Image (cartoon, rainbow, N blue to C red; front, top):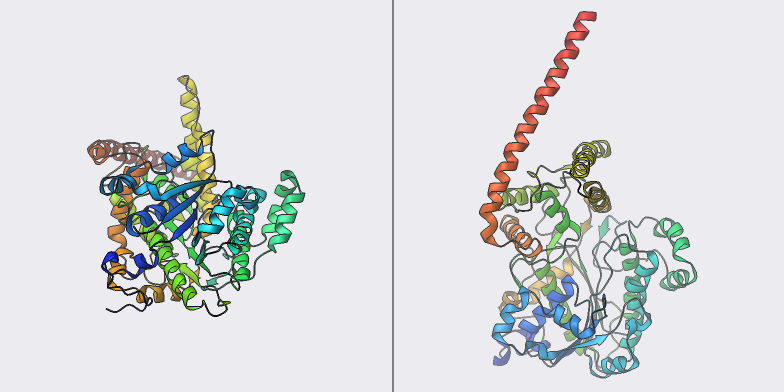
Length: 517
């Protein structure tokens, strides 16, 4: 199959027939967010696959007293780097750190660091963001909006810039029912927002945040929508591209099957359900769960960058196109699956390899009405939590269940906005991008969701959560099964006792009514 991806002479033996690898040849990249989940996966994929990259600069801030060099070691720790370490022990030699902080103006970059980036960088990949839904509006504005604004200003002075790619979210304009691959009007002007958060105290900002958000559910989607308007505006003078992934979940195969290192979003939701901790989710079970595997997201980002490099190259003698490409990376158009269907697949696989940390038999349910969900939370979360803490106090232990369930219920409340609603996403650009890849690039950078096998993925998902999040090797599965069998017996014994008590009480009431009638 011949590629329509560009005139890159795929026959060049150095690149194994890959157009994408050749496009990245000799490039210097500035990547933000490499300490986060998606950013780290992008870094790993680039170093492993696009091996002829010249340099990668990473924006890293000191954290919890750790020096920059220690953060460097932290980034390259973990199982995802073991293969590269064996194949190429010097793979880290291309990576350089620049100190900074997204909360600060100009991303906290020194004049010296800015000069290096402006003189050397070809590709800017802005992946960093605060993804906390309950983040203070000031912090969210600085990290998600001002950092984009300031990085664009740096990009304008970058001498050899080929592409500026911004990673947003498919839910940036969540008040809309239909989300196409285009820009939409922001909820607020970016300058007005930054002036406002700079002028008011955190207390005053917290008081007016609900009014500011309007139809937007949280500060994350709100600030992402505003940041997108900056990308649209500056796309007339800079070669830009924007990717909007949907709900990101564990990897299909790269760098490791099921790889995940966080419990954000549905990862945490399903994990808590699988451990028997969470028993009710407020949502519509038949709605599409628009989840996308993280390694597919990474591959789509790398391909979109490469495509923009080609179009930018074609425009050298012309004014850059005023239309910045937008890619919605989602699953529903090609491989839809409902929340209930995916939850069942996870339950089925989870019962085959239960965690040794399980606290009960999983029996969660997605409830569509507020009253049913509230009653379930009361009887299945709150009352058991108080009973557990009561017994903990009796034996002289610190109570912890009530506080834990308050956090769990808060997580469920935050995510309910997304589980109660359904969106229609258009992804024509993503589908067209996939069709343009040659066969070699499709093997190296798979991201099409067409014919995606959710059943197989559920197995990978559960194994990955067990191994990489819970840190439980496969050798512990027999122990987990033994624990789960015990919980199943206790669970159904308790249900039987409760049903018998209920029937006994009902019989008494019927007899009393019959006697006095």
